[in-house]
Image 1: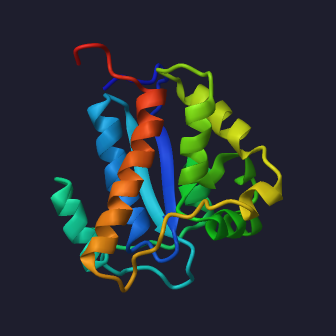
Image 2: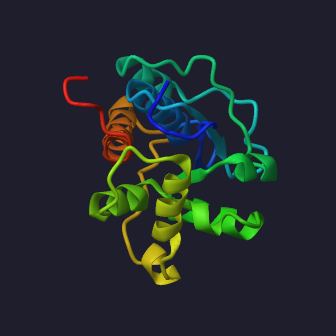
Image 3: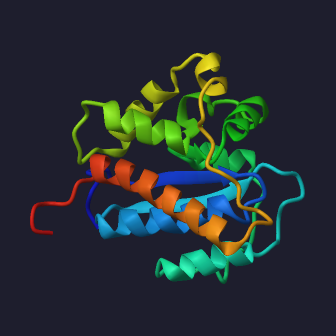
Length: 195
């Protein structure tokens, strides 16, 4: 695979609360988008909630993934830990509370952790042209993470949590996550004309 010029793959961690609804969808959606763009990447997901391990993806997330041609049937939830955060080049969360909790729990994640909506907005306004190397991705993310706390607290930066809602709400979340990650992947790793 190509896309980055680095010897190592891009490593992305996608985080939500229980790792059953939003972040599993984000994981498979981003992995698929990066694969289609020829990017060597490792995408994993986890949840911030203590004890949120060993559970399957929510039924709505599995159904939406299937509609998108993806598979969450083998997903098992994981609780985020220091090693997983440290291994990631980028940590993308589904909400502001996840950014805050990760910053409080894990040293060294401040300059690589941001919400998916923040990331898409930053990429949309950045002059950086892809394809990017892993080092360039890290620099772009660090720039986006250099924001005042008020910027996190004052905006509508969460992807809605569909837990306990009908499939239509999961579908809305899946569509939003797809659109936001496509903004990022298209900008960082554009396909060659005619590809």
